[in-house]
Length: 81
Image (cartoon, rainbow, N blue to C red):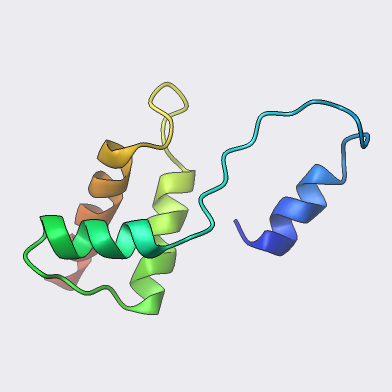
């Protein structure tokens, strides 16, 4: 989700309405996870976007976590081969 999409989505709610939001604005976590856990792998900008999109499609029972991030990175790296 882009910042623009997040703002658009939040504008559906009243100003004082309470919501739960997970914000993972910094792709640095994805970059570091790929590099540290996948033998120095560097992801392209397009691959970073693919990982973020895959994470957004995760199973709601699992949520966004290190495992879902790693799984998304592996899916993107598998496309390289």
